[in-house]
Image (cartoon, rainbow, N blue to C red; front, side):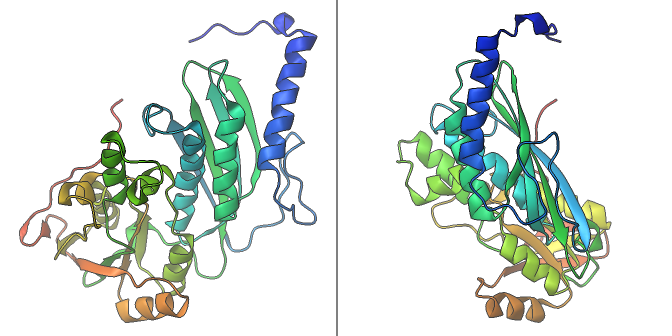
Length: 317
């Protein structure tokens, strides 16, 4: 544990520097219009209007060197990924974002403005305003994002609702993020399509809301690879599954599609796939892809008749 900071060391010059940094950050992330009756950055806590339906809360921590290679990608991308991955947790429940608070820890000399430009980009693109946050010093750069959302109408879609006979679908082919990281390591430019998929992931908010509207039984986002995440959904629902295929994105390998992670496509389970596809297409969304079905026996977990092993990204503690 680091030693506590002596408040007497906070000189007027240091205080001014901190305030100046905060002012510049607020100018970057605070460009969104604030709804009438709400108060965002500037007070000890944000004030939000009452939520509609169920309230959703989720937290993600993104660390430079763990979730993003700082030698290959700009610091902006860390900020973008931090917000996008947190918002994806709302998409996985069929929710819509109401706001986020962002806590940044970093060593002295970190370009906090660059970092917050990525945060602001993700907030604007996902419609999730930054309503507050905090700064502190540390040895590593990390961004902790807590997102707040809501589920009007039907309740949030959980992982635990899959039932035997349900169809299993994904919102897109897998492996793009892992392929992008591989390509970047091999010298591909930052604007390469697959590299962009890794550095600027897109949470499937519209798809999540559509799936919830269609009465999806269970759902989650694919952040650690379907080879791990599908087992997590099956564990929560106490069921098994039989897969016909894993859709592999163009340019990705089968292993990247299976265990690469950070695709942030949605894994959807439903007893009415026709209705699900109809609602997706009616809303101008790409129809989800069927990959298999749920079975009653939780020990049956196969792909093309072979045992579907658990493998994907896991932190080591």
